[in-house]
Amino acid sequence: MNSAYGEARAHYDKALQAGKKEGGSPAVLDEILAQAGLRVSSGIPIGIQSVSLDQIAGTVTAARKTSFSKSFFPLLKPDTEFGHKWIALCAAHLKEGINDPIKVYEYLNEFYVLEGNKRVSVLKYFDSVSIQAEVTRLMPPQTDHPDIRAYYEFLDFYQVSQINTLYFREPGSFPKLQRLIGMSRDQYWTEDDRMTFNSLFSLFKQQYLKMMGKQKFTEVSSAFLTFISIYDYPTLTGISLKELSARMEKCRKEFTLQLSSDSTGIQLDPVEKKASPFLHLITGGTRHLNIAFVHAQSASDSAWTFNHEVCRTYLEKAFPEHVTTSVYNNTDLNNVEDVLEKAVKDDHQLVFTTSPIFLKATLKAAVEHENIRFLNCTTHTAYPHVRTYYARMYEVKFLMGVIAGAMAENNRIGYIADYPIYGTISNINAFAIGAKMVNPRAEIWLRWSRLKKQDQDIYSFFRENGIRVICDKDSFNAEEYTRRIGLYTEDEHGIWNIAMPVWDWSVFYDKTVANILNGIWKSEENAKKGKGVSYWWGISSGIVDLVQSGRLPSGTVRLTEVLKQAVIDGQLNPFKGILSSQDKVIRQDRDSVLSTEEILTMDWLTDNVIGSIPDTDQLTDNARTLSLFLGVNKEDHIL
Image 1 (cartoon, rainbow, N blue to C red):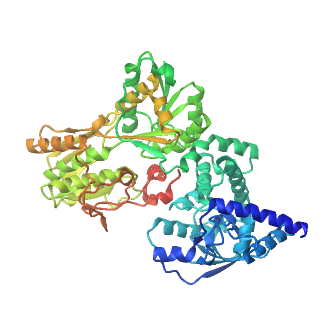
Image 2 (cartoon, rainbow, N blue to C red; image 1 turned 90 degrees about the vertical axis):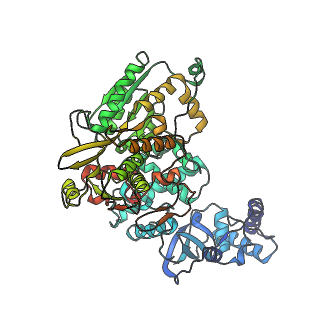
């Protein structure tokens, strides 16, 4: 027995031991297609490619299922024909390498071996990176299934980039990748573009696997997308391996969170805990907080900022010996990173960024300064480094819809929305459901105030169509006065305000600051074990409420109060029961309730809404910027 064969035989014994320990068997493409009931077109030859071995998911037929474990380690005894061939291939690989391409079918960007299973097995055993393969692509029929949508996005991406070393299963990820690296979706990559990208991704993957252990290539891809969301792509190209590793280490919590099936804890109500007077000594509470508020505008220019500023000044009065606050107004995407760095240098231990468009910069600052607590006012999305907070305004909008449905004598109700983002859509639908509850013929005529081009002045449009009951903006700033706010009726006699939503951010700020001062925040942080935390409180917390006009009919006021109490008690949810959108049935079960995730991420309008959700490119510049962070079109998202 020559030395090469003896060495190869020893490797086979180790590979066999690994296979028996792992167990299972490779996936079988024929079975996957049969189980899904899919019929694919005839294969499309796409030539010889370098295929990453971690993208080889299985075999084409079931003939080899008993020969390999799940990861292609051998399972048969060494004295079988299979064993002899594997050992011979191993010896050849040790001497001169395996160069003959295998034959594979590609389906949803995973590869299934038609010829060359043992070659794959040998190279996987030696932790090789890739293998040459003659690839035939199987095209699934286009459907709305997320896996299929993501795959066709990949095909569009591959056509312009010729890169297949990473893959995402969530629709919208490939367009997001292109946007983050500064490419349009139809922009062809140069050879330099490919070399730069491949170099960075290869280094990232190498370091990621060292940090997190062996992971699926889709998980590595998602981690890379998160990484370039935090650190701008141009700043990463060409940096040293040491600097790359240091930045990745700062993102370890984010990478770990992505591997969790339960990544974000959405807190729907304040957690009431009685703090021990000694809790701050045990859990890391503090006696004094310097708090920074970072706003996109000033209180005089923005009703949104005005509401937060009222609550900032409240904090200093509520905690006179324990809290000092600072405000940074008129921050934008061009200077927000500098502003946050200044807030850190100014010795603030707690930073609130009150605009969703600051989430990306807030996350980057939080990653760089783990000793500082950062919160961003936005819906749903949360990270281990940044908590988010918002209010369930849809509960108030539902009650306003009930009033509107009762007051609309001709069944027509106007609704003016601003940004087509998460939260806004659930507000519109809850309003429409409330109106329909008391008036089955109620129609919600939807118009958008942030479009580049309006076919007609919105108020003129409402007048011409006999619409007198209107739901308009939720609030106004300190220097603005208008009667066009909340729910009102407008006719030849003027405007009569019927009902108005009320924000009280002090409820959230008060509890958050108190929890940090007494140490409850730290105990919550320990309990979450690195998960993201998103606060989404409703009427029951007091963060939002409804004010009704004293001129409303007493029966309408009484009905609204009864429904409001039912919402507070958890007995009534606007999104329970049969729900139909403009083009399909969303839920057919009378007892089912939309999940929190489904409510947050609505991208459809109920069947009694007349209007549509505008595309991002139809919006004004400011509205488009916000839509890139929270718009219902995920393909446009920045973060």
